[in-house]
Image 1: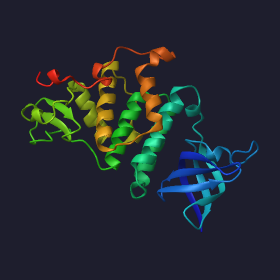
Image 2 (image 1 turned 60 degrees about the horizontal axis):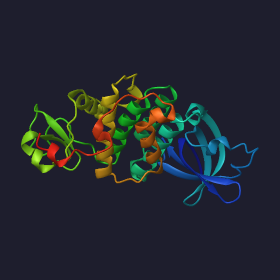
Image 3 (image 1 turned 180 degrees about the vertical axis):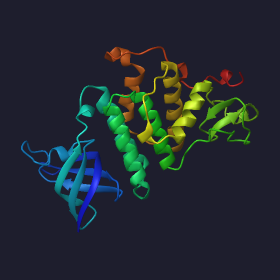
Image 4 (image 1 turned 90 degrees about the vertical axis):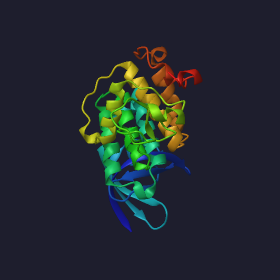
Length: 272
């Protein structure tokens, strides 16, 4: 059967002599594995179709578990995301996170357009640390693990100071703090951002400027959340975390950040 779909390449692996297998996240047919014959040959007309981040109109024949590419019209190559150090790192993380966090049955139109908007925001030069924190929230939601942010996950209390507890399920009030001594104390603006990110559609993301300390808190909160609930060992994450923590050593401007972005709170911090 011949399929024609709009899709984004979220994974690309070598296959045989000169070929590649790509995983497409599509707007209409979930995730699809497609063989791109001759993609690794210098003069291949399908070489661009096998590159990560490529958004295109793909036609392929499929009779079994894998399709075979018949034709492609590249709609957006996202070349900016293959240049320099930051672009490829953040975009690769977004694609790998999508591939690993979203099952075939959840890979629908909404997720497709969230990823497309994420890559577009990165290509446009929006703050990648903000873009990725919003996208991590979208992927947590898609996987069925949205944190509780507006009331205590332990007792349901509202309008009180919270700590952030991945172990308990999100916000944790003072009366329930004993349930997680390692719950994170976040600045109030960071709480507001987490709530905003949970409700925001990536396609409506504008330019957001945050203090480095806020970005560090957001990063650590989302990392702790995904480690607790998604348990994904992403190859791209290790490099990305090093990039965000040690950007100055790599020639990227950084400011002092959130101390617990590199360590959990001490036991004697829990009772503060």
